[in-house]
Image 1 (cartoon, rainbow, N blue to C red):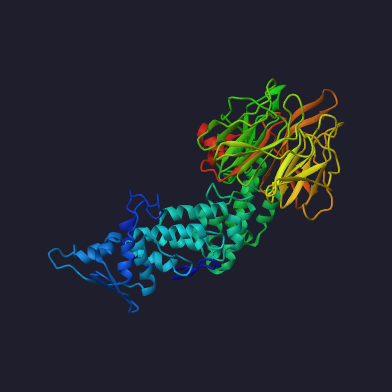
Image 2 (cartoon, rainbow, N blue to C red):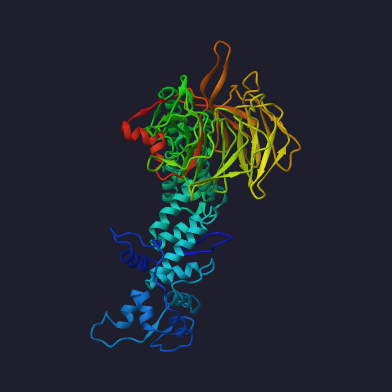
Length: 627
């Protein structure tokens, strides 16, 4: 049986060989052995140049290797034996003890491939590309040249994409490259929608492979309807032989996480109506959803209601709550639409601070604790749950605008307790140093900034006398500030966010009221800002993130005609494609002047999910609410 994957980068032909697979499994992947297909550390051994020179001149050679295509190589048996236990055993005749040493070897590899294996033996490296990686890995595995196996696996890992990941995964399984298999499986789970749409190999999965994918808690999908579509696509590729598996696969879909209208549509699908057991099952599911589930509760013990574990985790940190700054951290599980209070609180409460992420680390910058204006910077590692101090900024800044660009953190404007500032500075996390950059053209506190195409945009804010409409841009290459068109509305406590090369300025305070309005601008294309549909709740000093291709707005100040203003916990999200706003679950705390960010692909994402929290605290049969 052969299976080919279609790829513009790598072409791998997959061939089954039960005998060789069994042998390799015994040699390379014993039950308790650690997988060695991925290089741990580069070798510090420096290959003598004389080895390559002797090989090229055929000097001091003491052996010959005959290839399948008739090519012959004169070799140094000691050097080849050092790279390959297979050739060491062959040349020293350790299998037949007492027999004379062997000076010749016959190999099944072509001369072209064996020349690359010799390159590695003599120099420690070889040239790998899409046309030779299959044969190179095959024969490196056969002749036990571990270094080449590692290089091939690293190459395949670097080449992973939605069009070839399933083929590489099959190939890695064939040669028992366990680390590559695990990473390939993770790639498929985390990029499932793209794999489903772009991989020609998806329909060639066998039933068990498909079932393993769609039952995984960590399958990264925006909605469960996509899983149903994947099952239908897989069956339609070969309906005669695959329809018998429909009911088994239907039971793997978490139907309780679907919108009711979509669930009714699935219940009327031809595949469902063709089988009595499927119709009966769907009727039971619809009945459960309508009568058993309590509002606001999630029954994780029932697979149809069990939420997936999100690939992305939203962190909301600090802010102003109940009349004072807070150090609370909440995380949002977008798959369950639930906020969870975290125990990862910082020692320092702060509000009106900046926040950004780099390489999975959260940086909290400046702010105000009710008494002090901070120039301090704290960082949080969500993997080990540790907070640490970083180098301080040159200036104390609350109402600061913060953005990350080109692995550097920029802090602009703000208020130091005396004046509204136009100064700006930049932080290098590697050096743990801040440096002053050219000042903005306007003093701005309570403004908002975003990064796009090596430029930093900042809009609105307050200069001490008026709420501002103006906007400017900093060109990182030239280190110069320049103006861009003014916004339609003056906005302080505004949020600026980038989505699909478009700047969105949302909400804020215009000097009189909190705003529901928003506007957008496309640098280099738009002559001015244009309005978008209004938020459901007026707000200023709120947090904004991009999550699941939506723009989420979180908390903030809201106008209250009794008390003047109040903090809120309301959350809503905007779909740029439809220009519509939708409600999401509120935070546990009313908060304004908070900051938020999204981190993707954490190895411990489950810890920040409803599923992980419920299993940890209450066990498998628990129900989780919003508290």
